[in-house]
Image: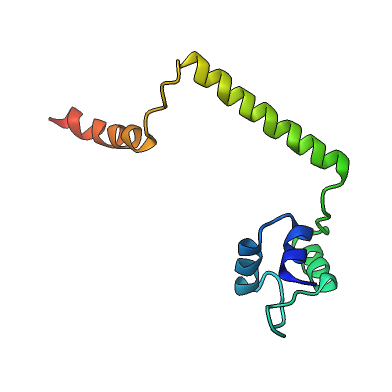
Amino acid sequence: MTASEAANLLGVDRVMLYRWVKKGTVRAYSLGPRPVHRERVEADMKNRLGRVIKPLNEERAQQALAAMRAGRELGERINERRNGKPWAPSWDLINEARDEPASQLL
């Protein structure tokens, strides 16, 4: 199978598949553009995860899409409550938390 087919089977993108190949998590044989054999992928995943990851069926795909829509709607409601004001960057909060103990010493 091609890398794209293997990535779809595992539910990841090709970049993640290539990372797994590089780490040795998934074995691939280079006969051109890195073919990956379906049987090997399934055997490797069963050995490492205890189960074979199957592609989403239509029902699971619809559930995933519904969850994504719900998350997007929640984000929009939060944004409305904040009057479109963006959240403070997290590094500001991290720096403030890090610097607070030092300021108490002074």
